[in-house]
Image 1 (cartoon, rainbow, N blue to C red):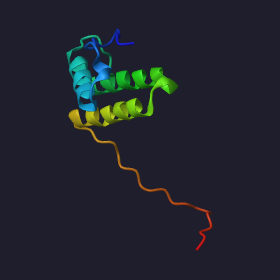
Image 2: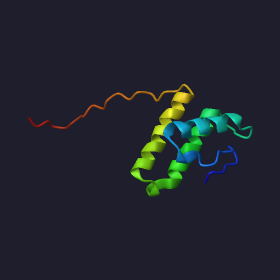
Image 3: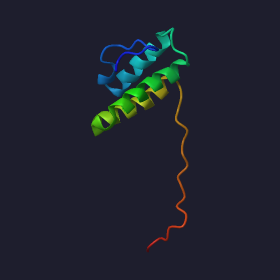
Length: 96
């Protein structure tokens, strides 16, 4: 799972802290000459692939670390997730 035709990943890349995971993926994506997309998309794709492959076998704490790594990766590439406006609850009667 830690090998890819698009990126040469460092050994044990998904075992560290969120910051270490993100930094390693960023380095790998920027060094790769075989990737087809921009470095950010390649790195995020690899992280999502790893999360999806783990599926239900990932513990809650491990999933949390990997989700935090996504946020770190966005930060390293200078991207922020668009803020979501709170949803309005329509048609729900309030009880007072």
